[in-house]
Image (cartoon, rainbow, N blue to C red; front, top):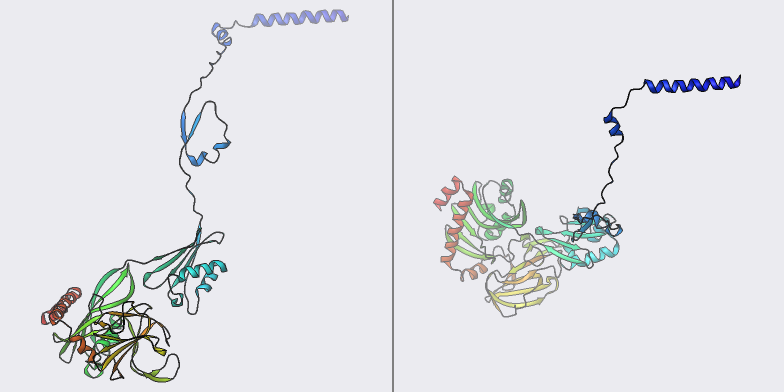
Length: 452
């Protein structure tokens, strides 16, 4: 039975296979051809040298790690890699009263050795004893705190900069100012100082006028109010900032029916000429050009000793090293030291009059005792020698050995007048009037100039 079953199964399977083959349709020739297709073998590629220049920043650091490519030759550009500056942090602050440079540098984070080096470098270019409020210190450092530059900004826009490197270097950066000429007109109702201050004109000009006219005009008694004052002055500017102090060039003041005019020179001589109604009255040479009158003649409380005593001259506050000029022609009678006066230069003007210049820092090498000098000649430099609270010029006029008020004594003016050229003086006056008119540019100025 088992044999019969096996034979039957074999016969059935064969029948089914034959039936399946007979039921299929024949394959189309196209399909048969596509089914028998085989791709051709690729050709062996040939080596080709292609020069390619890539940016150095992408390849310079890793070029030594690359293995040579069989199919690509890389040409690295021959160009130096630009150094990347590290970021800097900046610290800056103005000097406050009582602060020292070392205190400010310590606050900026500088170590003691660096502070000492900076102080020495700055001190070689600037007297650090003159450090005062209004100056500023700026420190630029890397992110790890290492200083790169230290800058000290002082008066007149000057900046002293210390640069850290292999060696410490110092440079002084001074601005190149533009000189501008300005003019103004005010009516005086109470005082010259108040009128100038209210008009926005430098009020320090009131001191200059008092110095020039103090011995000629009694401002308290002769000024009744309503007087007209016209001024022409020069300023040095860097952008919108004024550098240094303004300097008067011309002033015209009407008092009691008289017209007083003063022309200051622009040649640095400091020799001003005073006119009354268009005629030369006298010539006056300021001892320090553009300085501030800080103390007048007479009794005062001594700034060092604190007691009341006679002040035998006038003081002009100015920066150390400012030129000091002879106020009248004469002969140098003394150069040296005189106790509390410090370094002194004395000039004789005739047999009875002498001028004394004290607290000086230096005297020109060519200046010797017995030498003849003219008004406006530089005879010394402002200093703080002797008994002085700061840089200033103490200026005295002695007549027969007795001190007199330098702002009222006319003997020096007479000595200067003898050497003055009236023709040149009148020409300077005409030029000053024209320049005032040009800068005022107003109807009032034109009318006044026509009258003058």
